[in-house]
Length: 465
Ligand code: GLU
Image: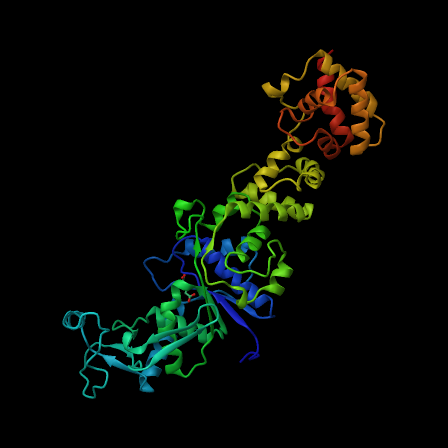
């Protein structure tokens, strides 16, 4: 047995599709809780539904978790692979007298239900002693009176009258374990101390508790978190736009921003909206989880994303951009582009809210000479403005290459020509970037450096003859 004080959490997705944003948040909460307490975060793939579980879905979920930066301990566990162990526990309960063999057929159960509407099924085999030699299911001998009480860390005390719960099937007559049994056996065997999951599982919890009690196993701490709703307050669905984590990645929100944003979906720490991983690990606690459903709010997400992009190191930002391009089918960056992009990021990252916005702003650093000039930008280039660019070239050729010095020089040239700075900025922008929507010309010049900037100006002034 491992250290009894160690916290163990888990994420237990069913591999039937992609990683939903709600699942990603559940995983994050479990990860934060464990990581903030020196605990373990485990992964269990609930692949018992053979018809719906696919290896592609498992791969997509693991990829999503990796993208989000949620690392797990040990190898992921396949629930299906543990079916013999689940059956073993059902038989153990049988031996202990906490479960019984039920020989009722599907037809008999249906007939009983018809005769006893709105009542949980009561098997005639619960206390039978004379047993036939026929196929049987193993059912839990659940308490018939009293209540099962869930002490939930988020929902508070939830009570379920035992006469509302039937003797659940643990092992079907074909020998396959039920989901309810599998979850409890796995959580117990994995040493899970805290079960943090969506509140759509709350109704299962009363049943799962009955299994813990029947086996005499300690119950884990339960925390059922409210589901995520859309901006209209309705349950999140495709109608609301992106719902898969991969869709958010493709929209260009960096993983660190998603972690921050998802942590705030249903959990709070005072008024703190923007934080890093260290703070999240330190602050995250079950007491900060609210009971009301959180609403997905893209405006807020953009804000959080902008903050994180601005706070990222240039090198991590560069690799986030490269991953983004790879994932969205963009051309990979060449070494020359990377060389020019890095200094551009320093000046641009404060203003972009998403990675594609940043790439768009940084386009001037990605293009090669001779710069293609679009129709709108070309309007700013005529013999007079080309002459101004020539004077500017002469003025900055030997000046120090700082934003201030460049601005001073440009002002002096504009003055010399008796025009405002804007009249010079137009052709300068065209020469440097080939279009009209760009970052500030001085930011572009500092990012491009002396040699590349002057070469781009030269390309235009030479055209002037
Ligand atoms: N496999 C379940 C799901 O994907 C989670 C079960 C659990 O967390 O106990 O919703």
